[in-house]
Length: 254
Ligand SMILES: Nc1ncnc2c1ncn2[C@@H]1O[C@H](COP(=O)(O)OP(=O)(O)O)[C@@H](O)[C@H]1O
Ligand SMILES: [Mg+2]
Image (tube, rainbow, N blue to C red; front, side, top):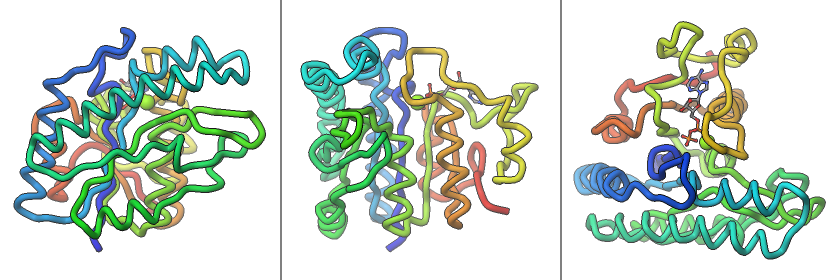
């Protein structure tokens, strides 16, 4: 089916140092890049976005001390409002896009995905609709509830859907080495040595920042599914990724 799964980081579409501040112009710009691609090529795309300043501050405040039902509500409501902005923007760009909330479609066990309803996502793709998922707080059999990051949703969906293009758009040009240069390629083997050069995010991020992202994608590469990390905060890079160009860092098994 040539499915692409595109993740857009919370660092790209929100002001990460603030609380619940969206970068609406950036959301619109990325929507237009996706819409232009779909208009020309019309391949199925699943979009997953991070929570950024919608969700992370709420999760830190209300969920770090254990189960808190009101904290789930506040965190989910916040990230849902960001999701609505993204879905609205995509529809205004001429695409058909619909929200899919992990709180309503996933189940965790100690933070790991044990159930994920994907039948509705498949039907949306068949009907030329872009499903838009997001990092969310999700019910957990052991912990009560836990944060499920967009960075974990992407490899899960990639593995169950045989996606062919996996991309994580962040606010850096790729995964940087200890000199600050973009690494062209990371393999499970090279990751062992350069792991120490990758850190979390500077801004409040409960999901592991760049290290969490790359770790997930390295695990995915071991299943034979390659991915890219690139800069979605720069104009046209999302577009280049969608068209299959060599952007950012390639994460692959060899
Ligand atoms: N080696 C590295 N290469 C790239 N980014 C890194 C590295 N180490 C730490 N980072 C930080 O990770 C951040 C990206 O992670 P994050 O803020 O979680 O992005 P996103 O919102 O896309 O998930 C970068 O802005 C950077 O500050
Ligand atoms: Mg992140």
